[in-house]
Amino acid sequence: MNCLEYALGFWNKNRMYQIYYNSDHVVNLPYGSRAIGFLPIEEFGYEHMRDSFDLNDEAKELLKEYFKTAIKKAS
Image 1 (tube, rainbow, N blue to C red):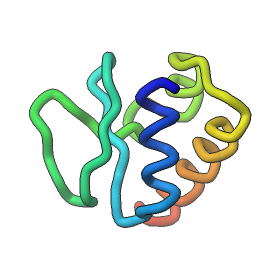
Image 2 (image 1 turned 180 degrees about the vertical axis):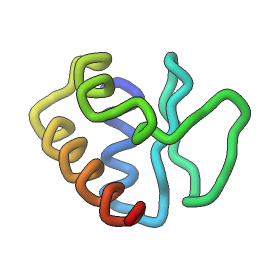
Image 3 (image 1 turned 45 degrees about the horizontal axis):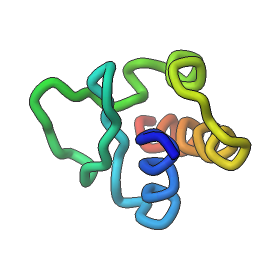
């Protein structure tokens, strides 16, 4: 399991968290948090995140759901 798969599973159980990425590692933080060097994965885009990690089928579906949810929260 890679860090994005873990973060997506964590988010699926704790939807008050957002997923952040620093082009090397993925972490979960409460919405509105800041971490030096990390940006929300929404800023990298769905395709970039999908293509940057070897995701299992469940994680691919969660990534799609995460981005749909993130778009709704942003509007």
